[in-house]
Length: 102
Image (cartoon, rainbow, N blue to C red):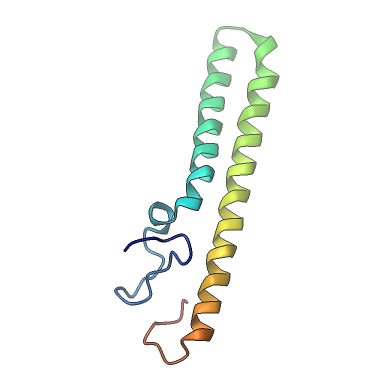
């Protein structure tokens, strides 16, 4: 599919233009990394509680919560960017055979 930074939507080859967009669009990757950090924060929080290292609980919980919130916000912002690009593309190509999303 080539470079997907400018427009990650597949307009011509599929009836589902956003299928696999998280892997096609490199701008989603920081959100995935933040969610992975959040997951490891939760695992570390459980381990710290199991070993009764209570001095680490608040810091690890903060890392987990901030990672989850920032990863989710990253996905929301990137989905909005992709939606704006799709609206712009549809305005530039009014007679295209691309289906409208439901």
